[in-house]
Image (cartoon, rainbow, N blue to C red; front, side, top):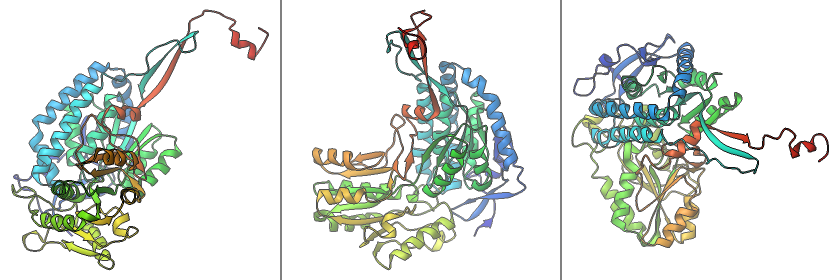
Length: 511
């Protein structure tokens, strides 16, 4: 599906930058030993930009061994020492921001304005946040809860974390996995998606250059079946964190639970976008287009199901379609581009198949096709708006992961909230209204890990990200993420110095 070629310096010289291989183990780049190769393809052109040796089980073993060796020293570092290293790390990332943005745009097809203004600044901010959070690993205050004892709670690192990150936000997902883990004193082996390893490798190199000890952050780039499953099932890996589809998450859970690992899953989504009849229509329309099309719709929190109360329904459909038609598809490196390609031709074809099947029971208002002309070699798909689908149809219930928004009407508030909850997923949602009581009801009753009011998509480092139901469990970002990456230990001191304690009579003797 792609044509071999090389990246131009104006894009990002991946083959030159990663000539030493797509693995990063014990502080050094390395080549995979699986005996098989893989290509990173620029989805905007269909051209190969980097070819590398995939990791196999031996590489995973080496990375886990490096992480295990580094763990005692890193876990013993003071919170202040880990915080200082993370502050330096944030500084190195900021210095390399343009390179990171270009590498992310090259491998993912994201417009540069997205990587420069969202992916990279968000990652630098996450790093700075966890530098501060590293000094706040607090447990419950000490106290005499039994009367005869003093108790307190310790938070301790778990050990080696084995994480698997997806291809839609490779840099940010690497950060979300690595930062809370190492801030809490763990070491980590991350497996990025084999189609998008570049910025994960750059992230790990920046960590080492910032003075984080070798072995604390390791990258193995291989297939999920070979490298990923071996990592999850590795006996020296104490915790698994996975972000990806719900179907693959089930497989990860099966492997992880066989060895009784700590498990953190951030899975699929099908976010509802609920527009009540008193909403600001223009704000809702702009929010829907931005929320549905960010990252070409390849976002598990993207607005995918717009439920619009009937008085606003027709105007919402008309204005949303008109605004979608102004979105400019093009070269991710061109300054005027709004929307880049999907991650691959296979993903583009998958999205197109969803839309084509929907033509049998719904109406495609705009989009629904791949552009031709100058963009025909890329994995592009036009912004697509669909109406007339039934609530139980595939296009409403299944995660498409593309620039597709389905709009359905509702009458009563009860109906709108019921429909919003009527999928297996529960990652994110939004409610659009000028009524504080409606807004409060929506935030209470919508079953999702994040509910925005009169906005959709923004995230911040201080607040948690994670889902309900089939969208998984556990939190990324925020201080809540330490609950995923630390073990809680209760420590209890006897204060009486009495040898024969009163409770002993329940085992032997009399009072």
